[in-house]
Image 1: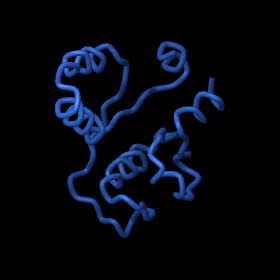
Image 2: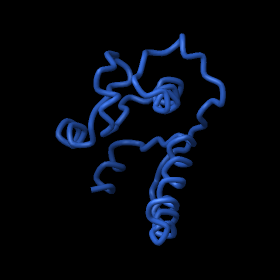
Image 3: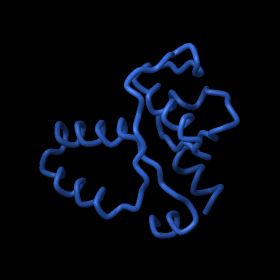
Image 4: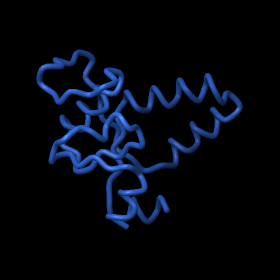
Length: 110
């Protein structure tokens, strides 16, 4: 499935997302950490940098402040679609980027 998606789309990951993924994997699934590293080495993606300082007043409200860096990275990098299964992104009403669950992205763009 990844090959099919990357054939037509560019995956963009922010430093915030990659760092969080590594931290959580190391804490919850330490035996799988090497597999994550391998996956990230093999996955074709563009890495973008999450700003360290964010002026919250410039961006839409999001219930969980820990998710704001993800939203800000997507906006700054002008991605077309923000894919997240996190329900905190659902109520955000904005045209760009389009916010979709993984399932909805596959249904709409596959």
